[in-house]
Length: 308
Image (cartoon, rainbow, N blue to C red):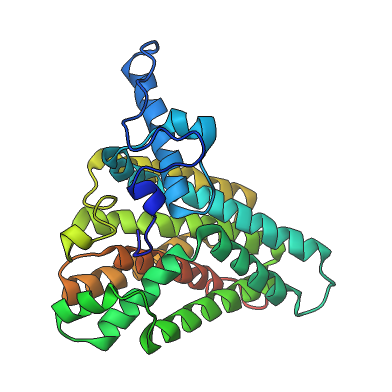
């Protein structure tokens, strides 16, 4: 959803045993339309997983999943499902580090830094790249067309570098604070829930704003042109169980302020994109994910009981 190219998907290359850019193999007829829709949804999830992470989908699995531009567009609905994988694995790394690190005040900070490194490696800094490109574009030009042109430049500028440093540093600091104030278990659950929630927010941007930019050269156009009601519902069906699970494992924690924080981040980004670009780009979606994740942490952190 940001400006990093994924040529292996755009060209249909899906690793060893790939069927290329052909349509997916026909779905089995037994089970009726509902079963076929479920299997189609699983295929779309795997496409999203490969597009938004460095997790390979190769061999026989790639042959079964198949690929087409229409499937790539449909996979956007499963962006929160990717959050289950990225957030779950990152939370596991954070929790594991807290168990093996010495019981020193710096331990939560070390765990926060190393789990952040893990998440960046897992996603290939996909969304961070979008944040940097958007900051360079909007910071380097007031004119809409010039800003869009700057955002296509793969080189990072001072605005992008500063945005990356501030956002990543803020996320690490908030995770360390949450671990100190609420314990390692809560911080790990917040990590998981934040990754799922922040990946729901771009779907609302896609739903309510038009795609802008140079369409023939746009890297997000094949993926995030628009999203229908069914796609939005699919995203919510990934998000709701994640929040139910977090609430069940950490009852009484201020999950509502955390979600409100993410919604505030979404609203701020929506207004910025609408006012400056009159629509969204792939970079804007990546930046929305990053800001919403940060605000999820902040919303929960400021709502922890004093002295917790």
